[in-house]
Image 1 (cartoon, rainbow, N blue to C red):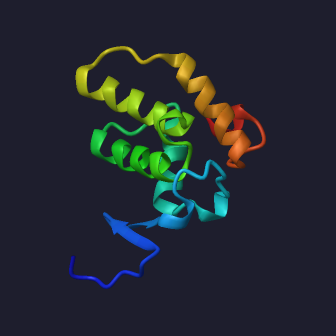
Image 2: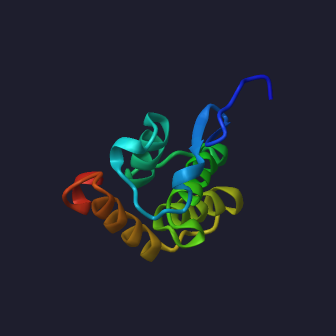
Length: 115
């Protein structure tokens, strides 16, 4: 790595990883980087991203900073990336969990506001 990094942060694709808050399951919307928030909101939209690499970038952030493999945002991003990769219908129950989770995190007051 060519950049200096402190002991408590790392950077992957210019998205900071705060080591102290990894898998804390406590997400403050203000702590979500703008790019990740934008991708996450677009995953909730009626026309989500079609580039699996972009989707996986958000999945990685939610895995690291959320609840790990059980994080609903991570799970939906992985489900959507799988759909894009193999053109198989997505499990929409995960979408509902994802929208409810975004409300819990504070991205919106109601799930329908995210669509």
